[in-house]
Image (cartoon, rainbow, N blue to C red; front, top):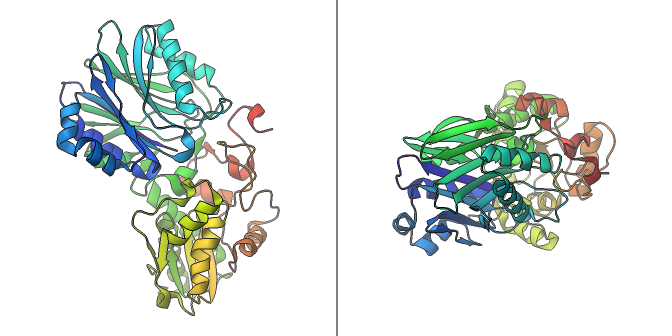
Length: 455
């Protein structure tokens, strides 16, 4: 995953304020670096660094004042997740157009060169035709079944024409994308949280297979390619911010509903003295679990902030090296030991992927703090198959396990030194999200990409 944002003022006003707030609001979608692309005649100015967004804007521009001096009426920005490619945006000089491109997604079959492939293809098709929609249609057909992408781009005619902001989403809609407006300024962004940071009004989600073109004449859009929708359910589980709304579904409410369902499902299986969360993405499921369990038991079961996140710690999911991941897990948060000592603890978390972070971080520290029993309550069903970003991957803790969710919960618990893992069913997850047409390949092995990439 990555975070992308684009801003265009049809009245020619400076968009620096919206750009800065929009990019910073998407920091959670990528912590490995960031970049922007703004106008600088005859082309674009596209600085990028391996820094968090706030420090990038502070150190590179001296803050908002310096950014305003560099920015005109349109701009795009990007926050980088480690696996998504290089620092973005990236530029391409075609025969007829100059483009700057940023994307969120993973393309398969191109050796991991996501951003360079996207810019080269888009530039080629733009040179073949001056029609954005025709170029977009050719691009989507070329990439059909080859992964996910949401793209924001600036396109300038090399003959001196106006610059347009062009945004499009893959036909399966695997990653989220939305459209907003603030006065005369249109905004496209990965999540509604970015619009909230800008204080823009949410207009709608950008549709799968849709292209949007914004220039001084306003906004136009067209649905280019139809396909079966397969939105990644992990957005509601982990990737997206809990303040975001995706496809009309409130992210925090989805996580709380999963917690409520887990409480009802496992009320007779776990004996809990208190509920806590693995910060930050485990908080929603923990709150829902605590509220529902207290209701069922007809007595108050406390929710405690027993684990306190270390400011500036990485989202450990984004650390690929195993040794580094163990170190990151150890300093990600610290435990209020007296809160959990001698207690049976239910600890909410978004998922158990490899298991390293949960075992070597949360459970290790709970055991050291002398918690009596530890029951992970997990938003995500057991990950029994690979992700579409790496369809042949085999490194999930529950990969290939067989049996009921209770039996799988027992097996994974042994691997991570817990007493029992409370997993939701696939039905629980689907009903909590409230959408049928989602990608759940990591659960059921039904991949929304070409067979050549996963067989």
